[in-house]
Length: 341
Image (cartoon, rainbow, N blue to C red; front, top):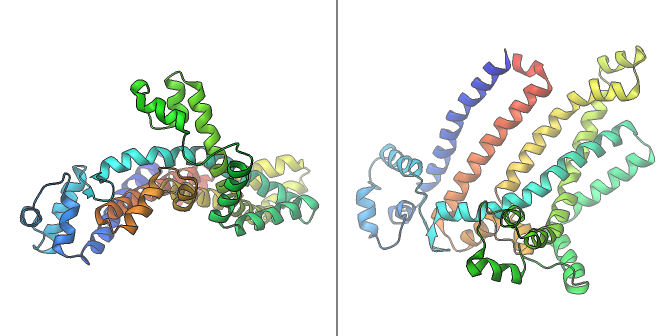
């Protein structure tokens, strides 16, 4: 099977998967009363609950309710978030850039450094580098993110006064509210450059240092351990042993033969990690006061904001589906044998 046919098949499989996601979320809705479900169909306040129940037939058979719900979803109506006082769709658009910006700086460091250290650890098995890498990984994976984040804030904010919590500092907030700043993308590091305000970009980068440090320290451990195990297994494959027997250099054996196969499990986990981070980093965003998806979703859940929670669940499902699609494509690129399955 060629790459084009493989891509077409994978893209077509996304459609029933997305339908399955919507069916699961809709099934959860059935545990709520018609009055509670009515809030999901509100895109602005001031409408009568009884009117919404009649218009959207919330007491009709389940398949009719599902059709009406899907129609509103496809129109971009995810309901009204009472916890923040605006449509759920607008909240997602507003909050997602803060989370995505944090992921943009965290994911490349976590994945690339994790893969590199995992390979080095496997190649130098049972040597000082391997032992050091494994110890650091175990310690990093064992650290509670809320505890580690609080310690970093206590040291670098409370004691050294070098950084502070939040996405940006007070002077930047005042400048943005003055009306001279245009939010082109919602990424403060990028919008600062687009507005010609380098000091805003530097301020946003300074605020990213601590949360990125927490996320990389904890999440890189999983990539390192997985890559090390996969690389050790790959180094013992018959074709790798044969390559060594032919006299190929160690670097060539690793880069051309062992590494490509070993990358597949690491790519799978990397895709899941990135998707999970894009869906909101609840603890990290809460500890550091970052106004992202995770922070908002946690507050909405505490306040029993049903439309917000379900809208967040739908968004999360879509992110995971498309992240798996990207992972499948990377599979086929790294190992062409997968296209033949």
